[in-house]
Structures are given as C-alpha cells and as structure tokens.
Image (cartoon, rainbow, N blue to C red; front, side, top):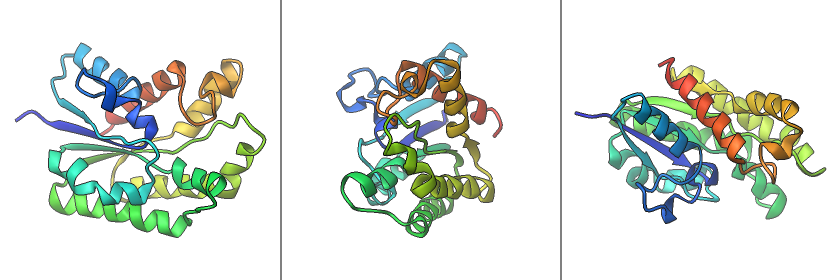
Length: 204
C-alpha cells in the first residue's frame, strides 16, 4: 500500500490550498516538497490539511478528521507561530506549558492509533517590525524549545527553521526576503523550508 504523508499546520502549510484545484496542495512549501518527491519517482500520496490562523488547540480540535483519518505513515506538523502572534494582536496568549501539553496530546494520540513517523517543524519569526523583535525572546523561543524537545523524545525528525531562515536572511538582503511580514514565507522562504523538510525526512 502506498504511504500517505499528511502535512498539518497553519497558514504556512495551508498556503491557499483550499483554493488550489491541483490536489489542494497550495502554493507553499508543501507543493515544492510534493514536486521534488515526484521528480524523484516517489509516489507517496501527499495530503495538505493546513488551515490559516491555527494554533495548537485548533489542530487538536480537528486532529481526528484532518490528520488521523488519512492514516498517515508520515505526519508532518508545523504549528506555534499563531500561539505567539495572538498574544500580540488579540491579547490572547498561549502559555508554554499549555502549548506543550496540547502538542504532546497530538503526538500521543497519533502514536497510539497509527504509530506514524513524525516530522516536527520549528515555528519561526524573521522580524520585520520593531515589535516582532520581541516575539522570540518573550514568547516564541520557549515554544521552539518545546518542539525540539518533543522531536527528540518521540524520535521525530526536527526541522530547525529559525536558524536556517536567519542565515538565509543575512545572505539575501534581510528578513523581508524570507517573509515580507516576518511570518509568511516568500517564494525564497518556501524553497528554503521545502529543502529543510526534505533534508530532515531523509534522516528517518
């Protein structure tokens, strides 16, 4: 049976996939990964269930329908930036402990039901405003550490996006070259994310 890869997450994964008639892959890193795998002769089924604006609790609410129901052999998760962002734009913070508890519950449920391989993608921000410069040290860095720790604990591949994108920004004229608003990737940003995902997937 052909393996299914499910990508679940927020707008970075979504990337317009619900308006995309071509397999609903969107125009972001998921499509680039799918195209590269196809070029390699890899016939695994790619499913994108990202939804813009999602936080970890939103993934939990739709976990059965949008993750487990597809019976993935490989489950890729990108979540966390909205858990930080809502603190600043809506005054609705997610504590690090709450984020960790919710994220762990997703992994535990998937592991108990399907025992898939996991790829955990590090949430990132490449600040383009003075306010965003505080997002990392005040909030997101702790959530990034949670994702890295869970990847190690669950034997998942970890995609270290923050350092990769920081380095690329320095080499390409600044953070806006990676994400115009500090969060949503440009074509270059998506290409870098796809490359990092493929490198991580090769390790598991």
